[in-house]
Image (cartoon, rainbow, N blue to C red; front, side):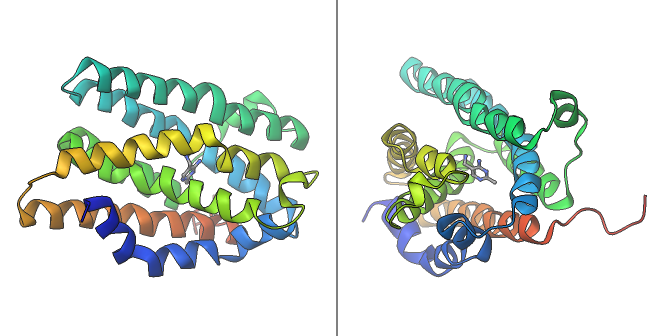
Length: 224
Ligand SMILES: Cc1ncc(CN)c(N)n1
């Protein structure tokens, strides 16, 4: 069994919780309050800045020029394609560039990105890929599932988001990462696989927390 199949089978219960989260359901049926999506977009923009850095670290740790080039492509598509979706939504919400630049990460955003950057900086290439994969893979799964809801991809507000994450271009990037993790884990000892599983589990949990944070508009609990 490929390592990605083992991860997929093992983590289905948490993935289902992501798919069933009211934030995700609300995008799918168009009922999500715009204020929550606005909050999410700003936090996600900050998240993606750090996430893109993980791909730069991936290029550093890659042991072939081909893999290095793929990570460079992922960095480019995150900054210039995925984040352009956020810029388009920002324009719809009237969020200025300044507001994006001045925005501060919420605790969950900070914890999630710092965890990934810690793993990416201190771990192996396989550790890094295990950390970033739930992000790409789960959004692709969610995008595909929501795109099956009649009319969801044509929704005047949330349709663009669903189209981005259900697109074959996004899916190809996720598949490349899945294949890379499978290659990197071939013939690896069980102890190593258990460690990678733990990393993958942690960022899967953070994915759930990110939906929850956005749904609850969670910032720091102190008055400032
Ligand atoms: C929190 C989060 N996770 C995943 C993705 C998809 N790159 C995202 N934009 N934001």
